[in-house]
Image (cartoon, rainbow, N blue to C red; front, side, top):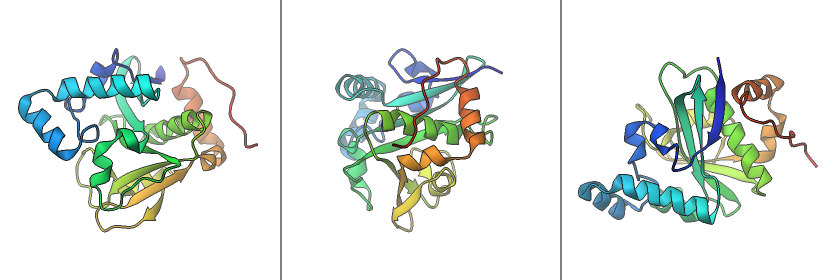
Length: 205
C-alpha cells in the first residue's frame, strides 16, 4: 500500500473533502465567513487564503494519499492568519506557537495512526522553521466531524491542556517532545512518507 504526505497547494486543494474545500470557518472572522457563505464565495475565499498564506508564510497544510487516493489533510498557520481564533473563550494562541486549525481522516482509514503521523510531520516542519509549539482549540463535547477537533483526540497525540474550558479548552504540543515519540511512530512516519524523498531526522541539540 503506497502512502505519501505532501504539502497543500492550490493545485491539490481539490483533493480535500468537498465540504472542506469551501469551508472558511477558520480562515475568516465569523461575520465575514457568514457573508461569504451567503454570497456563495466561500470556495474563492478559501483559495485566496491559502494563496496568501503560502506567499507570506509558506506551507500551511498537508494532504495524505494512500495508493494515490486522498484520505486526509491537516491545516495549520500562525494565529495572525486565523481570524476565527480570537472568537474562542480560551484565546489567544501563545505568541511562540502555530495554530493547528483542523484535520480530517476519511472513514475507513481512521484508527491506523495516520492522525498521529500527520501531527508529527507538521511538528517536524515547524521545528525546521524555528517554532517551539503547536496549539489548538479542542472541542470537549465533540460528537461528529467538524472544524474544531475533539479535545480527546488532541490529547491522544500528545497535546496538553494549557487553558481549561468546559467546551473549548486550548491545548499545546511542545515540538521537541515529538522527537522522543516511540520508535514505532517513527517507522510509521517512514512508511507514510515512502514515496517522498527522505530528509535527515532532527536530533535534539
